[in-house]
Image (cartoon, rainbow, N blue to C red; front, side, top):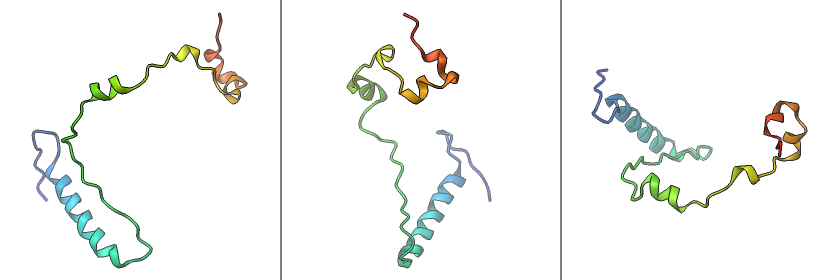
Length: 83
């Protein structure tokens, strides 16, 4: 098998693997036990990482109280407030 690296860092082997997975998936559709599926990887997402970041609510980590199991474990003592 010849491997060709595309400009986006994806090798031609990747596309062959995906193609083989599609074939295997369609062959397995008659198998009632198999519930696997293959999602297409669409890199043309209509939003940017900045859009996602801006849509998220800002959280002040210092205001979050650790759960009791973490507070009681000495390995997490660095999380304790020292105010």
